[in-house]
Structure formats: C-alpha cells, structure tokens
Image (cartoon, rainbow, N blue to C red):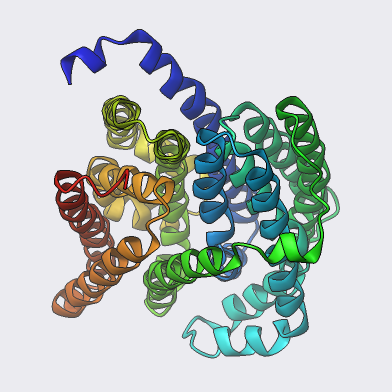
Length: 443
C-alpha cells in the first residue's frame, strides 16, 4: 500500500480522471444552489418548497434510469481495457437506443406519472401546485437528459474526463444564466427555473454528441450506426446489468423521496430548510461522485486488461484522495455552514431551521465516502446484483432508523439518511472483501 501511495504516476492518473469530474460535478449542486437562491429570495417560502419537491421528483424519475450512465461506464471501460473497438461503438449505440426508448415512454405517460407521484405528497397546497408546475415542464427534457447519461458514461469509460467536465460546466453555466434571466429578469418564477433547465439539457446533448464524435475519431472506432443484429448483440448482459442497477436506484430514490415528502408534511419552514440542506448533500454526493467515477473508469479498464496490479493501485489511490476531499467538505460545513445557508435563503425562519439540522451535514462526508467509492468499484466491475442487494439492506436500515426515531421529527429523517449512507458502505465493503479474497473480480 505504501509503495502505491508513493507512486506519483498513480496519483496523476487518479487526479486526471477525478478532478475534472469533481469540478464539473460541483457545478450541478451549484446549479441547485443558484435555483434555490433565486427562488429563495422571492416573497414566499412555498416557491422554494415547490422547486425543491418538483426538482426532487424529476431527479427521482431520471435517477431511476441512472443505470444508463453506470452501465455504459462499466461496459465501455472494460471494452477500452480489452482494446475492443467494435464493443466500444456497440456499447454507445445500445445506450442511446435505450435512452430514447425510455424517454419516449416517460413523455407518453408523464401526466398519469405526475398524478401518481404527487398523490402521495402531504405538502401544503401551494407547495404542491408549484411542484407539479415545475415537473410538467422539466419532463420534456427527458430525451436529452437520458441521452446525456449515456454520453457521460461512455466518455468516462474511454478514460476521458475532460470532455464530460466541459460538457457539464458549459451547460450548467447556460442554465444559471437562463435562471437569472427567466426568474429575475422576466419574473417567470417557478416556470422560469424549469424552462432554463430544459434548454440547458438540450444544449448539453448537442455539445455531448460533438465530444463523442471527437473521441471516436481519436480512438479510430467503427461507425456507431450499425445493423440491427449488431445493435441487439449482447443485449442480454446489458439488460441484466441495467435491471439490477435500476432496482438499486429504486431503493435509493425511495429513501430520498420519503425524506422530501415526510419533511414537507412537517411544515413549510422544514421543507424549505431541508431544500437548503439537501443542496449541501447533493454537493457532497456530486463531489464524492467525481472520485467514484474515476474508480469506475480505472477499475473497468483494469478488469478489461485483466491486471490485478492496476486494480489494486486504482483502489488505493482513489481511496486516499477521497478521504482528503471528504475531510475538507466536513470542515467547510462545520466552520462555514451558517454563511452558506444565508447565501441561499434570506428568510430568517428558514435560516434558523436549517441551522438546527446542520450538524448532520458535517458528519455526512466522512460517513458516506465509503459507499461512493465502493459503488465505483462495483460499477467498474459491472456487478449489478451486489449493488442491488447492498442498497436493499441500506434502505431497510433507513426506514428502521426513522421508525424508531420518528418522535424526534426532522432529526429522525437526517439520522435515517446518515445510517443509510453508512450501511451502504458497510454492506458493500463486506461483499468486496469476500470477493477480493476469492479473486472473483478478475475472473
């Protein structure tokens, strides 16, 4: 381990993949913070609550299909490590085909889907009204948003983190500018925030296709447009992997959705405060995801090349830097949390309420880093069933913790979320240690 940590080329490799993704990922919660800040300075808290609930529902809908990115990253990284150019092209084409199929299904059934989702909400009528308004607009970005997941996953799998970085930074910059224009300039309020995100998603799709074409030319890949027989070849493995990751995502989103809806039932100030704190949680998630993405790409490449030394070095280097980043995040929230809260909302009741639950966010980075890293390992190894089982155990832990602590109100929700993150890491670590000893990863 010490020898690997002294390997400067390993650190350069990890940081070359992780830093671009951390920088680009930070712009995603930054966008959420800008959304919250712009809406949070309007005259009523229910605008912020509506965007929080509606945005969460869009995230639930799209993140349930997050297997489009994760599956693409693992499969393309393994194809890249094995130097299989045909499989690289096939992986991208299959991913885009699935993304478009799912997006058309969402567009066709989005109205009954919206009714089903919001029928479970106990939020105030004003919050629910603006949440439904936000959702009904944002859903039209589905073809672009889901295709962008595939584009991101494929570029990462080919060990290129610079293109995804510029893709996310450029499109989120567009979103922020349009946010300010539509919400502040045109006074479109919640509708303005939603339209800004839709336009940004389609901008990302165009830019992403340009980057894919550049990368494929560099790697001298065969054409992406291929006969139906080639497109369908290998779909059985892809469907099995995506099915398991989908079920994993379903458990994940069940916890986040419950937290949003249960928080909404505790009052307008609680749901608005939780919206602020969830923006911080997303910042943690997206920051740590940068290193998880690096882990996915490096592990997949090592497995494709069947190199145990590459695999071991990837685990050591990425874990080291993840710990450094998580420690920094905890210190930032610990010493600057109040200032961050004040930047997002000028409503005093929301500020004071958020400050009460801030300590949960201080502990979150160091507790959750392990689940992000281990997710990266299992995505790179395309081991979906293990991820599915781990998430199911973590979900049970979440609801069990909340059930026994529910008399403590919103503290129970944050305690449940912290235990959820911890159990994800613990269960995956146990599975990984068993498979590592049995040398299953390179088999």
